[in-house]
Length: 525
Image (cartoon, rainbow, N blue to C red; front, side, top):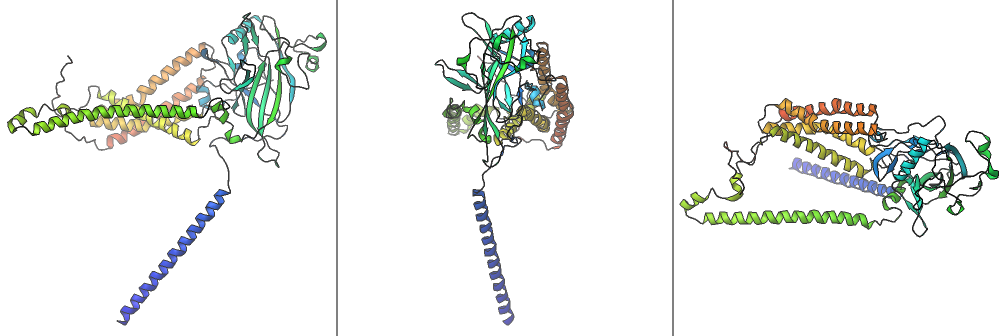
């Protein structure tokens, strides 16, 4: 009894110690959670994966780049320096960084415009160009086709500042700004040879001398420049860089009301390109500087996006209910027929049991199709495309595919498609095995080459057409080789790897037994 009481007493002490230890651990855990919540409440930050904000000091050079010119009237983007525009010293140099930029037709290059942080610029001369016969025809043709410039500062595309029908200034954040216009009365082409570059900056910490670009707009103007005193410049003499212009001021920004005459595009015409730079302080944070590109500076209300989403959801729900109602009605009719058969006599039941609607084909539902190999190839490719699309959407929603990184969406799509080749090989091989197919090598080869091969050769055909049309949308030869190498060295081996595991897996088992003889399908009346 003494030993028993001692053991019970020892057990009770152990239980008490365990309870005390559990209570102490719970207290420590709740204290840690409370401390973490207090700490998190005092922290505020942002992060866009793959994008790092660039901070400039006062006087630092802010590089401006030019992209391919585009038009809503044609699907052929053109190289910026194809037209008689000013070129940087040393010639244009490519600024594109990834494969996706080349495949999407982006041809980003440096520009001759010099911009420094917080440094205002007034009527700065860039260069003077004399239009030869070919330059005149090319520039006039591009103006009539409505081509637009696409400039970039700190990965922000330029917004266009124009006039409305009432004469008020308005910004547009899509499509860049036009290179010129055509007069409605004389049908003459005029070029925008002067631009007001308007840059918004934000200082995150007033005590730290660091500034970030949060807005970029361009106001194009067409000005027939003239020097004071009737000076004629050939564009080469150094004296012309210091001569004052009578058409724009050197200490005030250019306004449209100051324009005397527009710069017409004619043969042997001399065009002087100039620009102004205006810096404006903004309260917009760097993390939200892309918001104006989505809502067009509040011209497009946010409700429009919700209207589109709601409309799509309602259409899907309506169609789903329609299909469900049809299926339920057919099932009710079949079930009523089965109940009627059950009420018949045994001999009548045996005669009518075979005439029972959709259950007649239960032994033919999982019968292999006539072109079973092609069917499995299409299913495997479809699963590959579906997973690729889903992965790209998820990564875009998280923020890894930011619009600040041009071409990242195309690059991610290619990479995910290549990696999902293992899924395509697995699905097609396992499905083909369930059909009792024996040419598994041919099935795997078709899965790896049929759809990607057609897509690649279509891309190659149009790339050759764009090359002969002198369009900047044509991908360079090296990038075409890179895409082909990714297909042959990454995608195809992964398809074979997935097919290997697919054929090693157990055969799919179907819920019904397939009949040996296929049921005859009556011809439609």
